[in-house]
Structures are given as C-alpha cells and as structure tokens.
Image: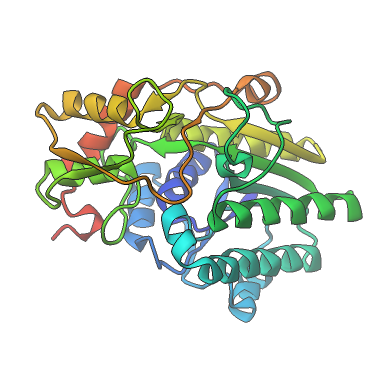
Length: 339
C-alpha cells in the first residue's frame, strides 16, 4: 500500500482528495495548520471511508515540525495543496502570500530531496495564464499573472521545472485547475471558509441561509454576454478524481507533466447564481459592485490533454454542482461548527 502525504489535507480540495485516495486504497498522511480549515473535515472523511488518516497539526513553514512527518512515515508521493489562496486578499497582502506559499514549498522540496521522495502533484491554478489571449486555454499558452496569489503559483511551477531538470529522478504533475465548487454528494463534507467567503458559491449559500444579507457581484461591465466574469466551474469530486489519476501518471515515471483540470465549459457569475437559485428554490438577493482587483473577464480550460493522457473527464453538470453545494450548506448551516 502506497502512502501519500497531503499538505493542506483538511481544506476544501484537500479533504475531498483525501477521501478519493482512501477509496482507491492509498494510505494517507495529512499535514495542516488549520488556519483556514477544520480537523472535523478529516474526521468526517474517516467516517465516510471507514479508514484512518494520520494527522499532523503542523505548519509547513516550520521546517523542524515538518521534518517529523518525513522521519515518522515512509512517503511514496506528495500532493501539495497547502497555501493561501484568495486572489483579492493577495493583492492587499502580497508579502503574506509570498512568505507562506513560497517558504512552505521550499521546505517541502528540501525534505523530499533529503528523504528521497521523488513524486509530487502540485496544486497549481489557472491564474498562471493571467488574462489569456483566447479561450479555451491550452497548457502551452504563455504564462503571466495578474495577482500575487497567481505569481506564487507560477514561481512554484518554475521551481518544480528547475528541479526536474536538476534531478531527473523527480516525477512532477503540475495540475492547473479552474474553479472548484460543489460538495461530496453525501452532504457530509464541503466548502467551509473561515469568516466571509471569498468564493462565489459559499457566499450564495450563506445568503440563502441568512448568514449574509446579499451577494455582491464584482463587475457587470466585462466584455462577456451578461457583463459578469466567466469561469470554468468544476465539481470538487471530479477535481479529486483528477488528482488520483495524476498519481497513476506519476507512478508510471512521467518526468514533468502539466494538465488543466476543468470542464471546458464557461459559466458566468449570473449563470451560477441562477443554477444555485434553482437548487435552493428561491431567488437570491444581489447587487453589483465595482470590479475586484486581479479579476479577468473569461477563463475556461481545454481539458483535452488531461483526457488523452490521464483519462480525466469531468462528469458533473452545473446543476449537479449547485445541488451538492446547497445540500452541504443546508445540512451544515454553520459548516463544521455545528453544535
């Protein structure tokens, strides 16, 4: 049985991926400082899978603590999620993002070299494409970023590209994913942001349950059909499956590979809002706000390469994503803080 270290494994994407790994027969070790996550997510994953997860409540920026994970476990591969992730916040607090995201990754890679762990899937982002010249976006597009968050992802990608040249033993998958939404169909785990959500769907669901007054939509004057931003929304369970398929590729000895993980379909903010209203069964109050720093008009993937080389194909529709998002929120109105 192979052991996978998942950094940031208690987060939204991390917890769903941990569940997918357990269901595929992997042993999982998680390191997470719970700064924007909750250990309850992992306890629920254990209940869903009927298996245990080894949990280290450490910060990846603390190398001494981090090294204990490698000393105490024989790691076969790493999936690296840990990092701060809000585009708007990164514009306001760039040094916090550089400090956290870059140092944690340098610590990880140094420890992987020291303990001879040469397999890694990196949680990158479509933000590395910046404002693309056209859509859909292909993996060979030029890379340029429009926010400090995106720049940390691009810097880490560059680090991994350099590392693969310096040490051909490494097998590295750069996974550029688009906009994960939805929740596990059980409604038992889902997206649980601390404080006011930065992402669209949990904001909508918190308005629906009365925790927030109305949805603010940043910009209605973009060059898109309805004036709001267009994104490639992918169900979180599809995204988790993409990571399992990427591990299969890594273990085959792939060198360095890069994949978009998306649906290939673009939906506007208003499209998503209307899908959510359909799932919730009532209208959601909203108002338009000024554009948000770092946002671009349209961004959606070409998923062809991931399909051809990994066998990855997103299965869930936007209505199913909305359904599962609402199912999670209505069953967990306070997220993992339920009394």
